[in-house]
Image (tube, rainbow, N blue to C red):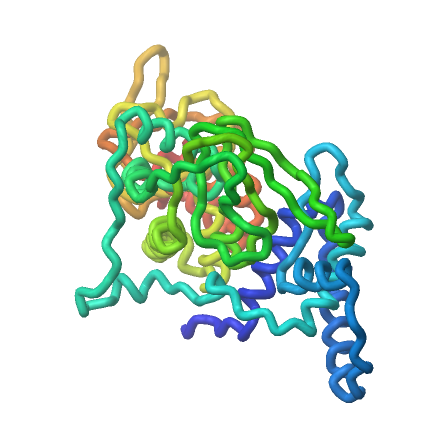
Length: 402
């Protein structure tokens, strides 16, 4: 069955919408989405009608209006919420509408970050010209600190230890002096930064051109990730208040290490799901949706994955390794079965809403793909009846009561 064709412009449209949500943090997503897309449609119609009208007579702009055009005429320019004096959703939406209207008539050059990136291009490159992983030597304690910071950042929390080491190795030191601008509002994203020392402030310019401080950093934190992740211009200027030390990850390394690993992980999940017989009735779209909801989890040999008597909140697919299913009866633990690559376990407690009736241990080091109960019910609807039938007949790969 051929893969579904993605309409031109869909990826950019969804990226812009995601940026709007992350920055506005609306209380009602559905309402915000309806108003967001309604404005896009209305602005598109207005732009089409404007093309048939003669241009207005030239006027000498005031200093403030010129500044507003310079600051607010770029696609994707959306407001960061202040830390203390937060605007309401309606205030943000009004500002967004003005900026969207301005953006229809700008000739600002296309952002470098808007260039498409296909991780498969590098994997399939046989010319030997692919980019090598960057490596910048740093003290062990610094590398460990950067690794711990990255673990708490959403962009990196799905990376394995090895992948996270690659990210940290690719970071390079940047020393800054008081008063130095590290990134500029509306510039293309170049680097992502982690702070290890120094004080910094993030500022934006409002509609009147006044500079406004929206966030301050004191020795810890990070910035610059949104412009790299969502192909959007910088949303604020970050300035060093004191001398300090930063560690930076280039846009090229970010895309290769973070986006590349994410794409590979998704392909691995899809390949795994193809090998699970119970999921053969899923459509390609359903399989992709399921892959996007899976979480990768590494388990060391001998570790308990499921404990008998615990509530069932997850189903597990084995990506690599072997697990052992046991049940305790009259104080004696008895092995029931083993599950290897391509098998799954833990579904029956989800189907019956009963506590786990068996324990599962990693017989070897194991790599698992994990699906939570909410996603299980939402995404595996077409397979649940078959799972129940197999549970009754015990044709599955694991204990009938795991």
